[in-house]
Image 1 (cartoon, one colour):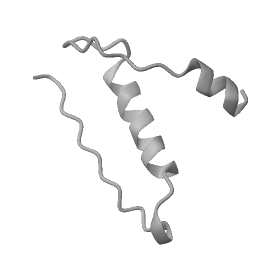
Image 2 (cartoon, rainbow, N blue to C red):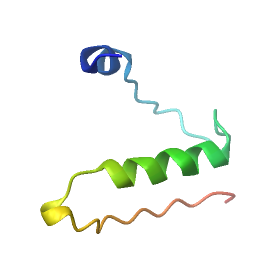
Image 3 (tube, rainbow, N blue to C red):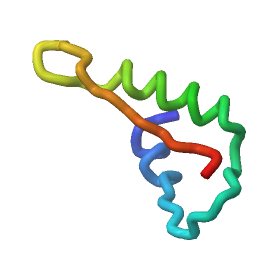
Length: 55
């Protein structure tokens, strides 16, 4: 897909509840990949993410 296609398909969901539309392992995988791809100063890879589940 081209970047413009990805931007057109991007959505934000405001109806938050305790059920996830995807599996927890998929959420973990996506977050791990995204944090590796995020550009940062001097390529220090200092980004940290905290995800709380099962509350």
